[in-house]
Image (cartoon, rainbow, N blue to C red; front, side):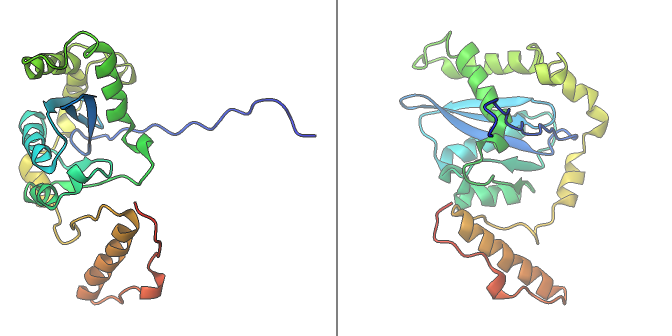
Length: 232
């Protein structure tokens, strides 16, 4: 006889990077018509950078990337995003390579993989946007003040009650220098990613075959390539 008792779902394992800047989760959130927040959060320390733009476009993604590089207190090694086209634009990916930053988009329909940035945006909606007018001309200035409060004064439960800034200072000895990050970037294995997930997988295998072939190893069999007509 089948049990009628509710079986709790298995929880997803939560994880955090150990090195500041090792991976930055990036996302956009529509606040109001013509008001989009761009958010970047460090997977390790939860230090964030925020900005608002009238649209989510490749051009604004580039502007935000420059802000992230400027305001993060440590080198950015990798950017993780969903599969929004504002992040898959060639100009955005090319700029990441110029800065020796790896691009790591998540799988389709997997928002939990970007859970830290999405949870932080819910905090923004509850604690910040509930107190301001999204159409106010000083919204960006107010958002910068909120960013400073979040990073330096607001305790974080997952950081044992510490602030993101305190979490970074605790890991200061683990933080690499910019020169070390640039030296470790291997542009031979990085490539422009395709927004269609299945196509991207096929290109990944093809790129791996080129790398193996150049090293003298046997390239993969084309019949082993994944095939799908679904869009990613």
